[in-house]
Amino acid sequence: MKYGDRLYLQKGIRLFASVLSAAISGMEVCPVQVEADVSDGLPCFTMVGFPSTQVREAQDRVRTALKNNGISLPPKKVTVNLAPADLKKEGAGFDLPVAAAVLAAAGFLDPKLLKGVLVVGELSLNGEVRSVSGVLPRVIRARELGCRYCMIPLGNFEEAALVRDMKVVGVRNIGEVLKFVSDPETFEKERMHSEEERDGSITETGPVDFSEICGQESARRAAEIAVSGFHNILFIGPPGAGKTMLAKRIPTIMPSLTFEESLELTKIYSIAGLLSQKRPLIQVRPFRNPHHTSSSASLAGGGRIPGPGEVTLAHRGVLFLDEMPEFTRRSLEVLRQPLEDKQIQLSRASGTYVFPAGFILVAAMNPCPCGYYPDMNKCRCTPGEVSHYLHKLSQPLLERIDLCADVPPVNFSQISGKKPGESSAVIRKRVEKAREIQQKRYEKEKICFNGELSGKQIQKYCVLTEHALQVAKDAFELMALSARSYHRILKVSRTIADMEGEELIHTRHVAEALTYKAFDKKYKG
Image (cartoon, rainbow, N blue to C red; front, side):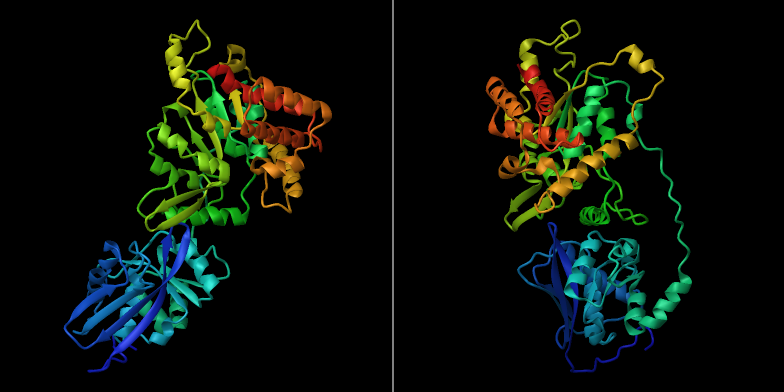
């Protein structure tokens, strides 16, 4: 067949063709059958099946792209249906499947060649196929459906190739679509000869390291405990003490991502449209640092059909809230559910969407507006100003934070000292050892870390010695702890015991956990 030749269409014959595509709905991938029909009638191009404005515009992009590539659709009635009709179709990724279905229905392609093929991509007016977001989850879904192969934009090829057991074909323009579908062997040979060698070199700046932090032994210890057990942590201290430095170095002591975790994160970032075309696989744990002016929708995930928010983009990594009291109360309260359930559930008129949100919350704050309370030699805030500032954080939110670490100002000898502190590599080895203990202990449970223990699991796995139990009881009564706060203390105690290789939780473990819980009460009291 020559390029642009029609095979089957004859006057008075009605042709039908169908091709598979997919729509992204939250984190779910819904198969969409793109059906095209060319029949006698007044010349028009009609799209049905609950398309959005973006999808409906595909008819103009497809017709113009075909015309600019020497393909003239017959002056007949063209009807395109996107099934199922009760699912809202969003985005420009339906351009290429609409074009493929119309070409097959108009006789330029054999409709049988499109069976078992998932197609996605956006068309420009000159026929080029542009990259779209959400290709990776679509390819994974195609593998689950047993498709023969996926046809995607060439710019998304590296991303889609991460699914190792699924054949993926990247196309540059509408002409390559016709060539591959009609003669795949010749097309693949031409593509192999025309591809240029990829530059595999990676240029990276030097990573930050814990050895750069001067002093702050207590805060460093708290950070190590938080990472070892996947606990949330709050740093409290004056300006310039090193709170942000500590937070930015926490990802450097977290264990490396497994391939399954990398693929899970890459899927999230693909849906959000945040992947690099050259290096699509996410290989480092995310560190999200939203500004304090961020809205609740940006943190939780927004839109009429919600997309991933900051709490989801921080999955498997760190969500850092600097100057936490400066965030609006509404934005902070959004964090309650994900901190408890490790996922966030958003309800809209179109349905309910569940996004993963298994992150470590790392927050930093000053104890007062000027930052120097309780040092009354420097602090110039009134008691009312201090109280108002500290009470911007609700007690239910504070109870979901496992460790509150004090970060005092460093002195001259600590800054000028030439001896560096422990490096991130040394701390990470201890973290990995503690996590191995937890993973072995919880291999029959649906959790991996101490920070994920439920109430029933706490009774089973957080076994205290007799004296440690008495200390915990006295603290519960003296500090007026809630049940949630008490359980958080037990989880942290379990992690400290694991870091020492102890099976039972001893008094020293509970005592250390209590010191990290007392700082928020010290400032607010």
